[in-house]
Length: 319
Image (cartoon, rainbow, N blue to C red; front, top):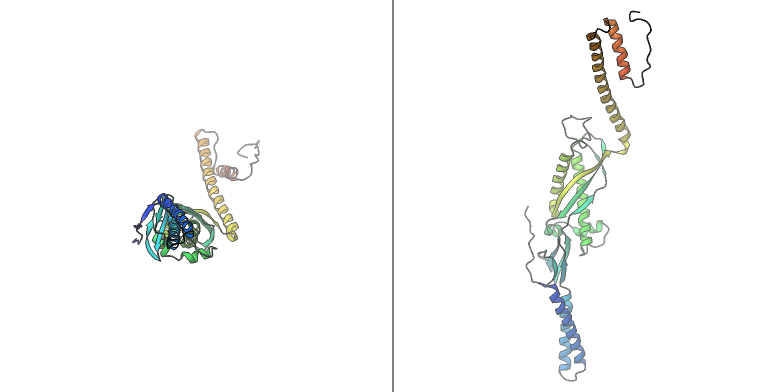
């Protein structure tokens, strides 16, 4: 995407050298003012005026210092005109009439509170995410969105020029857009495949695909502010409280049915093995009626929830 950001190309000098020059000018100016007061000739007016100018020049020098740490930037503006982005790490001096806004280019975390969203089939679910983002384009960040309004929305009366208040405004912007993107993505999928085709992706089972789509939607929404998404992941997913109990019972019922299917399948296999083993070893000959009774008894024992109570038959199988 096209960007209007460019590097600052104005005058940049060593900060420590200019600090020494500023202090020296203030000292010389103060000495000149003090010396000129005691003079009673024409120099008594010229020397103090010169000293005042030297003091003013020294004070102006003090206004031009900027200090940058790694992964920080300054947006440079000269009477409202964008003059570039300054990213040179260290202590420097620039034109004191240039106004700067301090930005952080470091990665930031957003742990979004779970929000209520209707999934694809209309079930209300609670979903939350964790987001890692950072500024990529300082021009868009400052001039393409209304940072001043966002700062007031976040609880600040003015935006200010310090990095904390400015980045808090961007955090507010990211939070609002992330909520909107999360609602958009979550509404396209069902919570699970209980009410949709088992081949369709769901919020619970298709985490990687959901996270990928979430990153794409966030990139689209935040590109206007020069913000880059490093990672976005769903970190909380549950049914809304008003239907959580009902859905829990449905899940329990599904689990019980699945377990019963496995139990019946295993019981049938064991009964079949028992009948084949009895016939193979010629232990006893059973007619169809006796086989049916034996199968019934074994199925009750193997599939029952309670412990079987054995009954000893002291008679004969023909009775």
